[in-house]
Structure formats: C-alpha cells, structure tokens
Length: 427
Image 1 (spheres, rainbow, N blue to C red):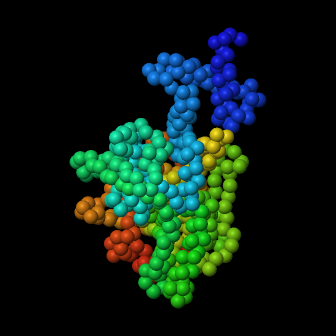
Image 2 (image 1 turned 45 degrees about the vertical axis):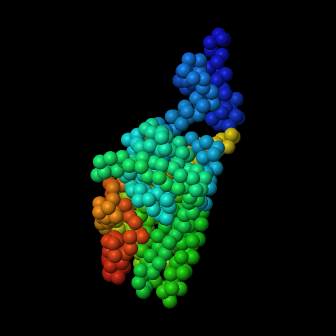
Image 3 (image 1 turned 60 degrees about the horizontal axis):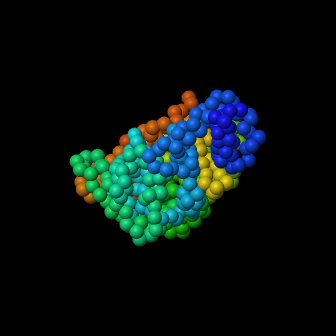
C-alpha cells in the first residue's frame, strides 16, 4: 500500500469511529467502494485545508463543520448538537431555559422568526412572526446555522443582547435590545369564557403538559360548578414538543382508536399510538383553533381529533411539520438530531409540508400597536430542503383579549350551536 493511500484508510477508520461512537473497526471493510472513494476525497480536502489555509485550524473544528454541513443539507430539522447545546435541549423539554423566547428557522438562507413565545422578552418587545434577524450583536446571520444562532442568543439571565431586524413594510432595519431571562414556559393556560364554556391553551408540549391539562380541566369544571357544555382547545402558535405528550393530550379527548402513526425506513421507526383509556371529557363538544404557527405535536393532536370527528378544527392551515426527529447521542456527549420518519394522522394523511386543513377556514388578523397587521408566518413548505409528501398567515396574541379574537368568538358561537357538531358526527 502506498504512503499516499495510508491517510485515507486511517482517516476513514477514525471518521467512522468518531461518528458512531468508536465501536466500528469491523465496519470499515464492509463499506462500499463508492463510499470509500468519497471519504478519501474528503480526507484529501481536509489535508489540503489544514496545510494551506491562511490560519491554522484544528482537525476537530474542520470535522465538526463538515458534520454540520452534511446534516443541514438533508432538511431544516436535522442538525449536529454540540455537548453544550445537547444539554440545553434536554433542559428545554422541562420548560425552563435561558434566552429570549423566540422560535426561529432558516428561510431562504435568512434567520427568520416563526413566532415569539408568550410571556418572554421577545414577546414583550413586539417581535413578530416573519421578522428577519439580520445581525446578532455585530455578527451578520447570513449562512449562520440554526444551532449557532440559538447558541448566540442564549446566555445568562440579566445579560443584554441586541439583534437587528428587517420587517416587511418597514423601510429601514432596526435594532432591538433584549435582556435575557430564564424562560419558564407554562405549557397550559385556562379560563372560563362564560358559564358552561371553557378555554384551554397549550403553548408547548413539555414533560408535564398532559398532567397540567387534566388539572386545568378539573379546575374549569370546579369553577363552572359542573361539567362543561363546550371547550375550546387553542393550539395556535404552538411549535410542538414531545410526541408522548401530544399522544396523551389527544387521549384525554378520545376513548378508542388510532391517534398517530409513524413510517420510516426501518421497523423500529414504524410505530402506532392508540387511545386506550376513557376520560371524563370524551363527549365534551370541542373546537380546536390552529394557525400557521401550529406545528409538529400540535398538528398531531389537531389531526387526530379531526379524523375521529371528535372536534371541529377552525383557523388557517398549520405549519406542516410532519417529520420525526430522533436524538442520537454520541460518546463525546454531543448528539445528532436526525429526521428518521414521518407522522401520519389516523386516516393516513401525511401533514408534511401541507399541514392540517381546518374544517372552517377563518383568518384572524391582529392589528399591532403600530396600526399594522402582523406579518405572515413561515410554514414548512417555505423552508429550503423541506420534505415533500410521499403521495403566510397571521400571528395570534391571546392577551389581546377575547373581543379582538374573531376566531375564538366564532368557536364559542359554534359550541353554542351544537347542531353543527351533530352534523359533523353524522357525515
């Protein structure tokens, strides 16, 4: 074997071992010639860059950059998680983390706000869906990865950060200075709309969302002095969260049948989730509110209740994130977030890039304090590299009050006209 070929062979073994946790010595010989040739090309480029780049750069940084590039080329949701970010992600699902309180994505190469999270610095500062983040402090965000952008915007409580915003309809860029907080997301909010009619808002699906929702329902019934005559489940601007919690929330309102199933390349990625226990709320008339900020887990709940004709879905088409991301830990405490399957509703509908279509289409334009309608939301179909099926939109502010919320008022009217629900059940 020539000295020239030694590096690719050694590097191939090290690279595969790095990616799969260092237990792959026997795997190298099974790799196809095409894969070997491509890895040899990568090893040669790595060597050239290390030897000739204007500044000295470490092999670790180059490989990490290559991993980031590889995963980001697949779809908008696959990513490499550094050890620090992986730890933060684990904290996020518990509903508490340090930062600004915005859901972001990459749209046409530009860092874009999907939605501000309620009761956070970003929400109180008036940041809107569709706002483009052009700079974080003095650094331009062009070509910045989503993971890197999140990392830069997070930080210790009480520290300040300035971001530069481009907003549709505003001629000039403008700066917004925010003070980071410990973001504690109360995942379920509730109140009585009036005697007999309850309102539940699920902000995100976290570890205790289903339990909190059951407690909220019990509280509403206690305040009402008995069972509810109708219920509004508000999933607008809910970016998703834990699949297990979405299934449990749907299960509260269903007594039998399929809730959601997943399909992937491998058998362990093909799963079905069923309603299996009767709750006290399986007969309560319901309207589910959705919009373009309703994504992932919230689409699972809306789709299940719609397919079972358990509730009317009102609003505008949802975000359309129907893909499953699996966290694959690596031995150095980092991880890969990889898209491994697609979600399907009980009737076999894939929501990927199309979303849930409401039974009743109704926009809900909220006018901002500046007198302008809020910007349209970004949907999955707008993301570069989004999955297609195998086979622009308003933002919502619940604190604006019920009188300014046309969708909520319409939902209440429908609940009072139970004949509508009878016709749905009979169709």
